[in-house]
Image (cartoon, rainbow, N blue to C red; front, top):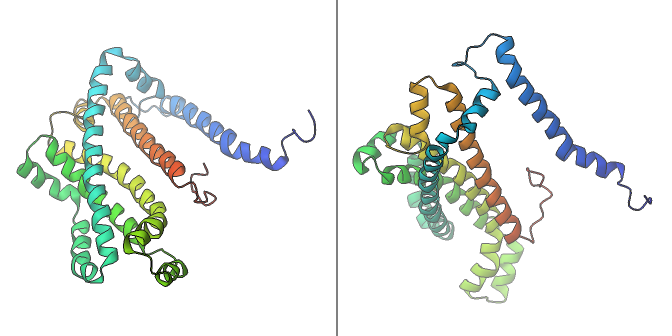
Length: 270
């Protein structure tokens, strides 16, 4: 191997930070979870071993149940993102562009956000029933505020010198919106959408806890009532996986769409 093709110490260290250290931590974590419950004499219903949780996933007879529950919960969360995120974008643009609208409506939006969604979830179930509508509304409410705030923050992050340049050349309002405001706001909007997606998933589960007939939240409560802790952990694992997949999808779309934005300060390091 030539000196030119040999990896530098800095590149090697970066590869270790990115792949080796996380892999080592995963190995230690898995080993600890598998052997420590038996070592400390913890019963199955308190903390099952990792192999017992794996046995739940190995049970082919439960695949259909998990798949349908995942479909229901994911549909509720995505519809919530579509509605709540869409409203957050539209209202965020409107508030950021009008001081009157901002001063009039933003305090009430903040007040609505301060109301615990878990507290109003039973009311939503009473008003809209045990079907999908109440879960979508809860997911929408949770997703709405992060997207709204990130949209307002993104629009207000437009650099003054760029805004003055567009004003100096007397650019039309639509041209300014298309070529300056939206590109400047998109990084912040994508960050809000990434948060909104994961929170919407939480909202769907909360709605299913309060009142539902299907979904992962219902399966989770059934396993809890039956003291089937391995199944509880298995369903939590599915929910975690869904959250990771949604977050990665937003990150990939963001990276492809915002090719002009530097990723040096990206917390994920990807």
